[in-house]
Image 1 (tube, helix red, strand yellow):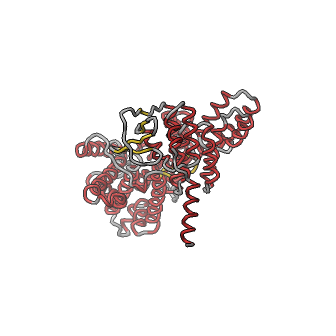
Image 2: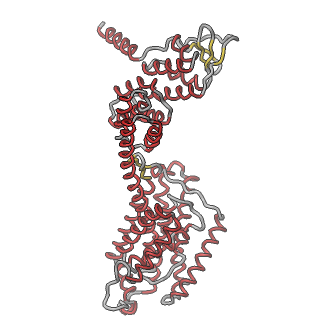
Image 3: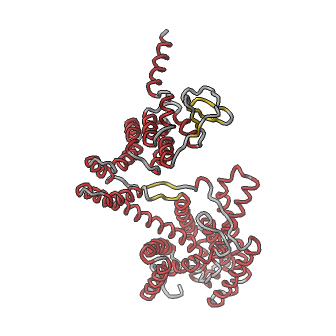
Length: 525
């Protein structure tokens, strides 16, 4: 008996919370003047009437018919009463429900607003995002007030409050407009800025206009921080890419003295190796596609390192100490590599997709979203930097490389196979270029001309940082990345490049050794 009483009470409670849609409500929403229909729709939505969502959806797809006695919903081949849900017959006299654009907007807003009462927080977030895009009016205030009263998530509650303020700011009541302006001063959404500018132009009351101007100023200050942080992040992101590209040059040019104009094409080899690994996963292991990048990283390194070893053994080893010949030879090699790729893969760019876990981004502010792939590249660049620094400073190969680059004859006298070390060092620099190509494939197009966009900047990074200095390479890469993005915002992309080049020329004139000079007892050390 007690369980039956509890079930009865629960049924009464649920019935109080979600009333069934009545025939009168259905007819009021489907027929009559637009203002009256919208008012009836909003009243039903505020009461969270059961079955309203299905009815609104049917209205939006023009699946509702009217008869003098009933409102009917057409569901495929079946017909049912909109209020009771019982099966019905469709008489020949049934009329179509006509919805103008204003009514359709109200239906879409009501459908989104009904999700505000969902127990799923993700559905409520989606509802708020949809409502922000809709054109609302004061007739929807009861619905927003009810959603505000029932919302438990603080962020969603704030979003609903701002949505309500954006609605109330058009009210004819001065007190309400003042309160709305005060609420909107706490906003950080760029859409609110457009709303305030529009309302300021239309506002006639000086006091309200002043409050709106203050809200706009506060919002612009808040948005400016997002723009500054976004600019800094973009600069660091570009700097991390330049760092990856320049790390290989810091070895081949900084330590070995080889002016390798084919360095960009070694990046291209790494990018195409990533493309091939992606296609292999798509063809033979589609279930593991999200993890193809984990295999593409070593594949891109090995592919570029192998090409670098072949180039060093066959051509570059005969040109050490002859910088002009080396420059011309490697430039020719770059043309050969580009044409080879065009012959194998075509002249068009090839698509490389991000794994799902590198897609999207994290929203730090309303006008600042940090993409996951950019964050991953920044982390990857510093991991590669740490690995190279440890290898150069702590391993036997690093010791041999430093010995050969500082004094080749003395290293040979000590039993070091200098020719083999040259091959290892050049292959390492080429492999790091391949890693840069793998990273670039996640943020840009992969094509035969991939390396041409970064080769000049990477040489500038190495020269500015100091020949053979990894610390200087890091500072120069990040500094040039941020400086380039700052200047782009002021002078445009082309003038920014020119200004950066002029800065580097002037800097090198004053300090030829770069930011960090090579330590030694003589110029040859």
